[in-house]
Image 1: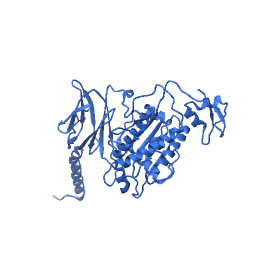
Image 2: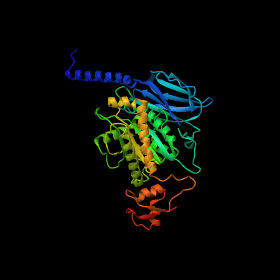
Image 3: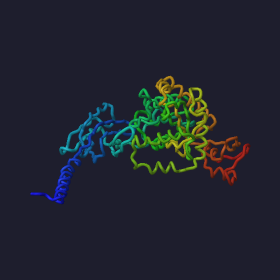
Image 4: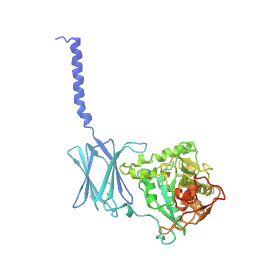
Length: 443
């Protein structure tokens, strides 16, 4: 029988439709793979990171007697090794896995204590593919009971010490920049931070608080929050970043700029550092309180003045350690510097992308030189400040003579009084002051 041209067209369309209908279930049934399992232990929580080949549906729930956590993931195949937890781990003891319903996966975590769980997925970036993140918080832990690492015995009955929050950049799932020899920024800066903390704690009037004490990730805003809870008088963030030009070298010191970066390198570094939250991953359910504190005072006049002074002192002392990338304090919009009430600086110790500087950063002796230079700058800054107020009784001079570089807001910050009360007691209608003017300080 002869088939007409019209019938040939109908037959061809029917065959193509049949092929599509047959192939569609095959596409839908394509499984994701679980390719890696990593865990990071922080003082207040443990993070599990599951490397997966595509986004997945998942469910997490807890079981009691004994305490366990169950993670069910749909349409995925297990293709990696299970991690082993040290016997000393405070939360986890064992992880098990088994296929479920022939196409799904069930992972069971044997726990040592009840936990609160947060889970979220992260999209691929330059360092990682798709990730499913599980954060485990011991149920009994309270924010006020979190350990303060590397602090000497408290001595606040009469003479409170200056508290310096030392922040080692990156950590955990966020390795930071990488040198030619494989040197990780997160490792180098933590080593420098620990050396600086030891040096600070040797000072009779200073005390160190390590924001990050091990290899785990902390969100950028969380770092500010931790410094505030530690009642820090100064925040020092330590980095060793990379630049697209491998010839870039030298140290830099940064303070916050809300008006744009002061150089191309500053722009590049700020964009790199601020994207760390996308690498390490953050959940969005705890931002309101922190964001409110960040927006508390957008002008930050007193804090900016103090930040610039301490940055200048640290920069001056770093010049004796090696080459300076910039001879002046740099400004950039680093998220980690946006605390409204704590003077904050960021130190780029060197460019890890430069071969010779990477070699120096690997040496403990050079790390100690950097730490000593930062300490000298911090000491110089604190020497110009009045002793920090006791938590019980505040001492303040009744009068103060205005010096060159003073601002009324900075004086208010120094004596821990409000700007409005300082104006009121001196019958000032504005914040304008002159050198040699004597003002009264309210108690």
